Image (cartoon, rainbow, N blue to C red):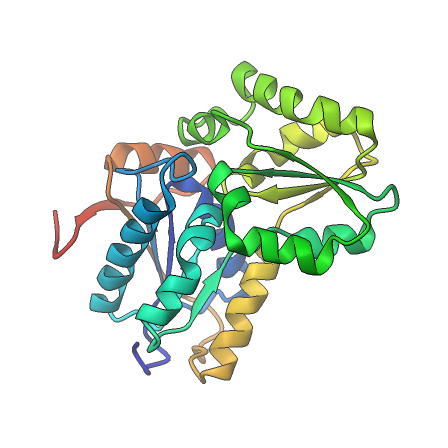
Length: 270
């Protein structure tokens, strides 16, 4: 880990989903330099084995350490479920922030006692999710759906198209019939379709985006380790992908970000 508070924060995801977390970090800490990496050569993580995701996460962490990162954000629910405990054991020299499905705030605020959770299969299978459910969801009925194919639709930039709507309606209709009043987004890709989700569930159902809470946790760790950058703004972000530069660049343009993208492989940049 770099002990230099001017070193970058590193953020990674299987694809573009982590940009929802990156956006929240940029808003809360505009003076920080950030490395964002989308592992688009291997997206989606959700259908892969936990062992495979652990391996990708370890390789990315080694790359970030070589770049001098001071803190790593695992901006991917699947990678957090598969690898967060492992990464903290293997790399104790650097702080990690991972994604935890927002079951706790959902359980605290639900009035109907019925909460919908949208996440990938690997997230639902992981220890992290089960631990959160055991600790915080007592007395609350959780309805789960894996939204098969939605990550791929979002990667392709289809944020409000017919197929994205069909996947979400299939997932949410039974939940609405059962009386949910809260939806937890357990995948960092899903905040990009919040307008579509809100359209389907209506104004009386609360949709929880975990990104602002993750950014606050980043701030707590930066302060705890005396790594907060002093300058108030002017931070830069480098956008990296293991896949095609055009795929990430096109998505960035779609969300109003016009930045260059670099393709990376381990050990060298292309």
